[in-house]
Structures are given as C-alpha cells and as structure tokens.
Length: 136
Image (cartoon, rainbow, N blue to C red; front, side):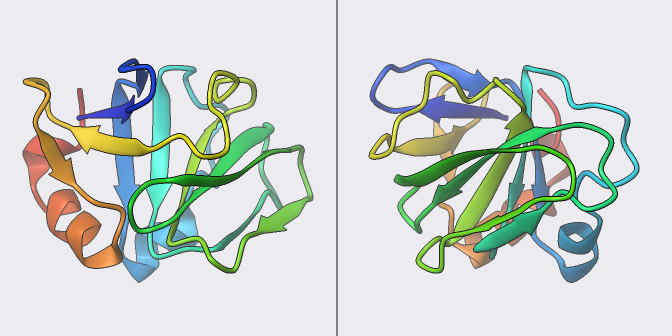
C-alpha cells in the first residue's frame, strides 16, 4: 500500500502501517529504534500524538476524514502535538514529510493506483485487517 499526495501524484510513503485498533494505536512506534524514510504509520482515529519514550524524532501530519492535511509538526523526544479537528495522524521519520503542505490531500492506494481507504477509522480498520494491505 502507498500513501500518495494528490497535489503532486507522488507516493510519500511506499510502506504503510495502519494502527486502527486500541492496541495498535497505543503501541504506535514505541519500541522501535527508527522508521525508514519510505515508511509511514497511519493512526486512526487520532487527533493527538506524543513521543514520550521514543528513540527518534518524527514528523506528525494531522489529516481530516478526507485526508486533507491540517497540520504538520516535527516532534523530538518527549513532546506532544494535537489538532482537535483531525481524524487521523500520519507519522513519518523526521524530515520525510518535508514535501507536504497544509491543504494537500493524501490518500491510500494499492500498487495499481486504486484508492483503497479513506481516513475514517472504520475504513482504515477494514483495510488494516486485510493482510495484503500491510506492506508494499
């Protein structure tokens, strides 16, 4: 699965993990030493994230239900950020979201380019339960 920027047509992540259950949202990126620059984690539903106990900084991109970017924040360790009108947060390695702008629209697509999910929690839960959607 790929995360694509509709404005540019570019894949901003080619490996996308979805955290759409209580357990996967709670775990997030905790316990990892790093996140590859080509990877992203979509957390939904979610409007706030933190980097407590994390070993690396992240870019947090807050999106609404349609995937429109509302806010982009780089978070070093021991920081938090929120956007109460966000439906989901996409986490990248720090610097990997550099080409994104507020107002860009992101969408999840399969390898053929077909849109596979919106950023609503229910849509992402059904996508996450499909094992074919977890990797590239």
